[in-house]
Length: 483
Image 1: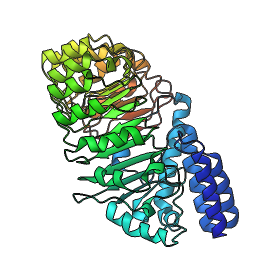
Image 2: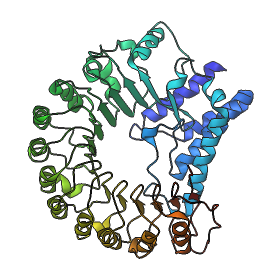
Image 3: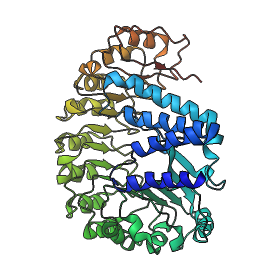
Image 4: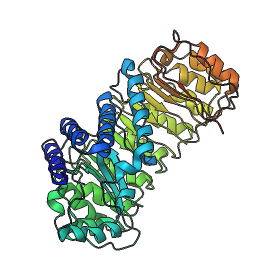
């Protein structure tokens, strides 16, 4: 029977190999669930139920990875999720989380003991493996000696980490069969060893998402990026966070070019200077399909915003992350006002020291009324300028994050005056000073589309109030975390 299960897992892997652009395929997993339920006793029934629960999350539009990793926490509600199905989707996710907590030991039992701490499930089967280099290399040798039965054919996302400098390349035995969708390599010098690995070529052919993080390139950027552009032909998302990329490396990146079909690019937690941004935004980085750019933690300020705002990259951007930068002066906001954002839908300004005057000026931005998501977490709010900004939000906004912003009960009335109140589906107001009055005032207002409300850590003492369904027909509950 074990051999037949391995064969069915192989069928799942082969089916997903036919559709490498998709994170996973549902139908062959359901077939496997039926077989497990019928032939593997109580253990098989548990695994079958888990497969169906996680697939229900996929079908509902809210993919669920378990155990959840902090960096993969869900952003909220997916764009395409209809409000009528949001409650069902969130219920599916909650049910899968509870089931995994109760049955984690049984769900992990079929897999080798060494790999269990490193597995993350999606679609009811191992989907991600995040493992240190040395652990993986040690056990991969066993596979070359006929070690089978690992049941890792369905893993689509791999994260390898090295804690030592000068990581050596993998031997060919380290590459599993399968169709990798996402790949992350992190640690000092890790990319150098990774790209030297024999056998890596065919394994990279289906990768859509590639992240090379944490000093993966110690100065030798050219050697690392050339293989990236040429050896990952289907790449759609590239992340280079926390690599201490400097001026010369930015120049190398511009000369080498990036895959022209790239849709998302991250330079998060790299120090981006004015000179760096000149090469990034003006030196022939032809990325006509780029829709998502992450510059969080790069120290973005006036000079970078000046170059960004005049770059052709702006024209197609839909999501821009400028969190934890150095945006604070009046000239900075003018750079944002003048930027050629024609299709921007998601703006993240988390953790910037924005004055009330800055927010008031930002309210004049031509792209503000068309936003679907705005993140102002950790941005001091509540003044007149903030009020003008909130009243300038449009009826396309579906998510507003204002956690840890110093909002008091009076801010609730300002939120109620925003046109966005008619369209908001996710409102996050955690870690403010709203108190009991702020919560009650909030729930007395009509929120016709609201599904998620985060209001924990607001000095609220009353129990969760009864919701007025005529005012909040789709609200699934109020998140009331308490200290």
